[in-house]
Length: 586
Ligand SMILES: Cc1cc2nc3c(=O)[nH]c(=O)nc-3n(C[C@H](O)[C@H](O)[C@H](O)COP(=O)(O)OP(=O)(O)OC[C@H]3O[C@@H](n4cnc5c(N)ncnc54)[C@H](O)[C@@H]3O)c2cc1C
Image (cartoon, rainbow, N blue to C red; front, side, top):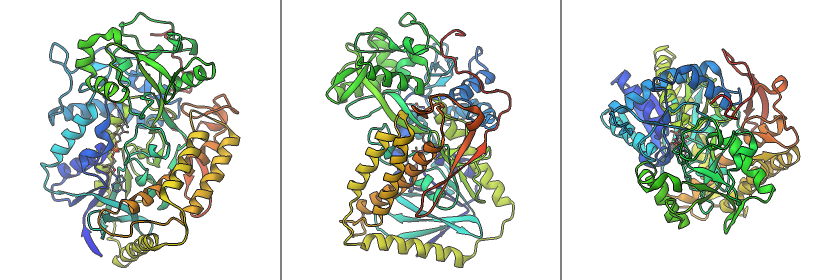
């Protein structure tokens, strides 16, 4: 098997992976950096982000405000020391992007423009129209091209991490165009593999978001943290799940039920406010978990708007006017017309909650380090945790930058710590075992199970039992179902046994990742007998700080169920309180 010798291997070339690569190259141009991605970097999901990235910049804002919004938004499950680091670093990272060429929108006086976002009391979301992710990723990608020490391995699919003596020392990947396996020996590995929303049937997530990075770390013995917290975004197009950014509401769009009522006022999200007036905290700028839950109740009351794709609510942006919509939300207009045949300038657009983001992920600390020496993680696949039980929109893009860089700095510290090189025999043994597993999967026959069949059953179980509201009975059923699906996975048969771009094989591997992540989600959700943020239990409706102010950790159980235990939450200055979005303090 071909071996690539490198200092740091990065799994993933989205926002987090690229930011880490640049930080490594800048710190030491002599470092050999392998940037491994199953898609061309610009096709990573970061490209799809619309609304923007949060960082304090305006004189009426403060780090304390950003801290409080993030911690309260996360229902006090965020690690507050990590949040403090994050908000401090955020403005520097966004200015850095500006210097690398990111075309942030401007105020008339030339300063950086910011917009409102849900759960943020102040305007602090930097944006580039409604294509912020595209511009951020492009800026990072073009900056990475300036560094010859970043060697790219595009369309390489990582299948396993390599370990030696209790530390991570590389990974194995399939070159997709040839099917050959390549071993990457690395003194440190950074996982930046993105989220896992594809385990649900209705999601904003691109097809690549199958939780591979999480699953690789999990199988290597690193726990997945807070996996029960899955974010629904309130405004997806019912036809496709395509996202209409929160910036629609940040710019003044409102949500209506079938009677034309701004129903969020009935769910403790504040009094009705005049259209077009910027308001903070209240109504449509409430946090995503609360708004998605309010929709669920409206649906139960029969107040939803029926569409051919199921129940919806209406996002009304007509009062913003064509000029503002074209300037600030051009992609939203485009997509509403293309996918729903509705022009937001003249008609309200039907929308409904859609799976969007994983708050949970690979257990990391403030240094982006996992408990496995030599292994770091950043971006959506990691859980540091700044997002707690519910992420505020626009914190994620900034998180990629802050912790992508942090992971790089920690990896360098690790290299400098003088750990002895890994044993060639151990790495060769690990790589050979990985190769044997792939061969076995490709040659298996007679089992009769298909990737598409199992994937559909997994998605149905997740939607039915691990959605906006959950209960013990449903979650227990989902645990049983997923255990069964994992058993049946061993009997999957591939139709395609060739080597060139074998998408059948890749989808089978992705399904394996999703099943592992999904099992961690439902097992953690079953054990958390309280309601907090995005995890709402109908049988345990209240938050229970006495028992559950703690992070869940799901440990890989091999052929058996995951083992769940807990880790403390770091609290520095904000004691758990009531999340108040009534507008009383606006
Ligand atoms: C539609 C949409 C809009 C959003 N809008 C916003 C917003 O406005 N503001 C905000 O803050 N957040 C937003 N988010 C969330 C945010 O965009 C994501 O959380 C973030 O971009 C994830 O970045 P990442 O670098 O962690 O992962 P990604 O950008 O998803 O990149 C993952 C990388 O991992 C690679 N990879 C994965 N598995 C493998 C494997 N097995 N082998 C090799 N490579 C692999 C992929 O090729 C890819 O390069 C949005 C998300 C979506 C879906």
